[in-house]
Image (cartoon, rainbow, N blue to C red; front, side, top):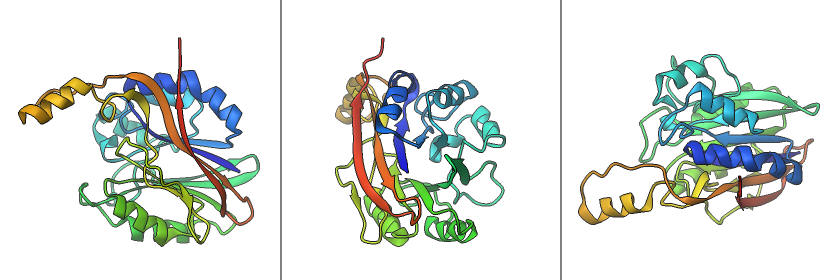
Length: 261
């Protein structure tokens, strides 16, 4: 099985990159299932029904989230009804939505788990213990398991990957919008990349207008930031996984510029 995991989808330019580029990319890569982190789909913060429908129609099967998934009330309501729209599982009990989902893909069962880090992030429940809890609840015949770990600290991402090595098929880090060049298969068979980047404007500063960010650094004052930049791209990770064991066989970093009309 081939799993394509896409980084943070940023605003309209990221959504358009998916609409213009993902169908052909998915076919060429022979991806069986596609995930994408959508917490910034409606700008820099949150989601709306229109945004979710656009991303889903582009060929994304499971949408994951992070700390900004809660930023629009409309988005929070959506999470109550859609099992293909995940929020981090380690938020405290009582919040709406789903933290993981099991899907049948071509006769094979696949589990996608969404977790969020705590270092330099909101102080929520432990992602390590929540991962243990979820994995202990998954039926034994579900061998293929993919994790989107939305976290700031590289050390926390790598620590969780080693903690789950051999128990999940792939762990892809999201949140920073900057892809790392450390894709690998860990010793016990888990495919890993610290951050898989974004779908958005490559010629930007993490998807934001360059001049505005530079002005903020130069002047030390609060400057209004807007999504902006050129060269739309899709970044992510492609993992090939053995269906029977759930172990990763191959991992490839994805970075493609999308030339839409």
